[in-house]
Image 1 (cartoon, rainbow, N blue to C red):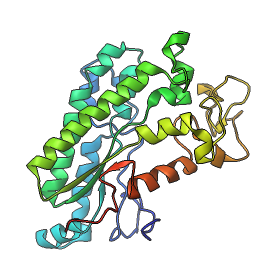
Image 2 (cartoon, one colour; image 1 turned 120 degrees about the vertical axis):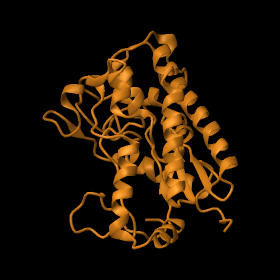
Image 3 (spheres, one colour; image 1 turned 90 degrees about the vertical axis):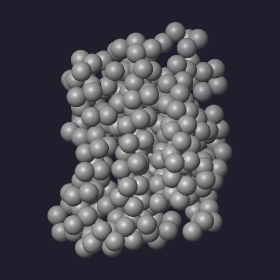
Image 4 (cartoon, rainbow, N blue to C red; image 1 turned 60 degrees about the vertical axis):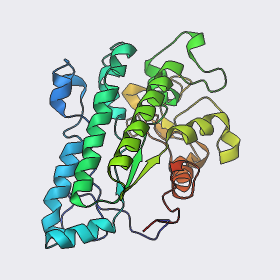
Length: 289
C-alpha cells in the first residue's frame, strides 16, 4: 500500500492477474519438507500441505503465464521484490507443540536456516535481485505459547512477561539466519538481500506499549475467549469459534488472535522495514542500481 501497489492475489486464484505480483503463502507453511518431520516422529504436528520449496515450485509453474521467454522472465524478476517468509516459526511449532525438549528444538535451527538459504538461491537463479528475508517473532511473547507452556515465575522476563527460553530460540534462529544472509551476500554481490526484523519491534511493543498507541497490559489477544485466562486465549474457543469475542478497538492491541499480530502492529513493522530501523538495509533505502 505504501508504494501504491495492489494487495497481492493468492497464486492459486482463478482469473486473477499476476502481472503486479502474487502471494504464494500456504497455511502453516514450514521451511523444511514434510519428510523431515516424519523422520523425527512429528508427522502429526505438521499442519501444512507444503513448504517453502512447494511455494517456489508454484512460482516456477506460474512463469509460463506471466512472461514469454527466459529473458523476459529475468527482466520482470529483476524489477520485482521477493519477500521470502517469515519461515521457521511453523518448523519449530512442530516439535514445540509435541512437547519435545527445547534442546531438541534448537537442533532444527541449522536445517531450517539451510533450507531458507536454498530457497533464496533458487530465487536468485530465477533472476531475483531484491529479496526481503524476515526473521521470526519473539514467540515467548505470544498468548498461544504463554497459555500452553506454563513456566516457573523466574522463567518469565521481569519487564516483558514473556517466556525467556522461547524468545532465546527465536533469537538464535535470527542470528543464524543473519549469518546465512551475510554468506549469500558475499556469494551474490549483485543481489540485494535485506534482513527484516520482526523480533525487535514485537519486543518493543511489549516493553514500550504506549509509544506505539497500545495498552500497557499482559500480552493479550484482542479476539479470544474472555474469562478463561489472563492472555484472553483458549485453544478450544479461538478467535472465530463460538464463545470468542473481539475487543472494541484492535488498534490498541498488539496481538489479534493470540497467534497473529494486529493490523496496527504490522503497520508499525512495515514502516520500520521500509524506512528503518527494523530492516538491514531498509527496503526503500536509495537503491544501488
